[in-house]
Each structure stands twice: as C-alpha cells, then as structure tokens.
Image (cartoon, rainbow, N blue to C red):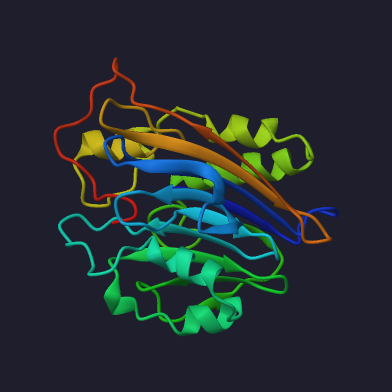
Length: 251
C-alpha cells in the first residue's frame, strides 16, 4: 500500500473515511477484499505470500492499514509488516496501547494507521513515538505521515473535495485512479533511479511488473458500521517497468 488518505472526524456522517491504493509487484499473490474465512468479522485483502494484510476492518469498528517506508537496499525485517494490521484486528488492545507495544526492530520500515471506536493513531519505526491524531485529513505514502510528496499533496486536496460527494464513492475512486506523474523538478529524492521516481510519483502506478494492485474506499458511520469497496487491477502489458525494482510493500 503506497498511499493512504484518512479523514478523521472531518465529515458530519462518517467519523472515519479512508481512500487508499496498494502498490505491489504483480507477481505477489493476494486475496481480494472480503470476510476472512478464519475470522469472518474481519474484512479486507490478504497477502498470500506472508499471510498479513495491507488494509482491513473489523465489524466492531477497528481499522488498520500499513505502508512501507522506501529505503532502497535495506533488507526485509524478520516479520512481515502486514502482520501488524492483522495482529491489531485479531486482538483487543486499544489503538494507542497496540501502537506503543510494537517492537519496531522486528520489521522493515513501516507506517501503520490504527483506529478503534475512540481514537486514530499513526506510528512508524522510523519516527520517535506513536502519535494520536486529532480530527482532520491525513495522507501517508512511503515516507512519514503527511510528508509533502507531490502525490500526497495532490491527493489530499482532491480527497477533501471528494468527502462532499459521499455517500457516493466515485469521487474517491476517481482521485485514486490519477496516473499523472509529478514534474521532474518536484520529484522527491528517495534513493531510487530517476525512472522509478517518475513511475512511483503518480497516485495510480502502471507498469508491467509493479503497480497499483487495488484501490479501496472505506467509511465508518456514527453507529460504527463499515462500508468497504475494493477495485483490483492487473499489470499493464503495454507499459514497461524500469530495470531497478523498489522494495516490496508488505514483506
């Protein structure tokens, strides 16, 4: 998952709204969003390689999503980052207690968003401490929370407008489908080759080997009921990938 937009107590009818894209290698197997066979009260996608998830919800109001921190050359951690949202959704500690109890050294760099019925937290093992988030709009890609990468800045602005179109999800899915790359003079320097910086700078990523695999929109209403919709995508055979490859999303 390489872009997560969250509106926390920023809409009169939906205390939690999420619009997110999961970017990953197309060869990595995954299951589409739906009730988990072993935990039907949890809904979301599942990574079939390491067993975790990039975004899911639980019927009692819990939500979790994860992205990687882009760190070229840093090896994967001993435990998949996708295990973090899975563990939160399968347990009962509050979002804050869970965030404070994570062993960051067990994982490669991550951003983790956690919500229970009362609070929304962000944490990263590349930041000093977990953060309880106040009402507002937030965006995270593959750096820390609200790092002003062009895709985050652009998507947050469109997300604010899309909230006004709820309960329709079309405006949210529309902003998640934006394939336009950032201009070269606005690209971040994250240590990958320029061709990859260009490819990864768009909200929706298209290539033959790596790209946006799923777009997901979630709302939680004031009674705590979730609505979750996912749109899935395959490789673009007409769009070549650069030679160097980024780090996988959930590994």
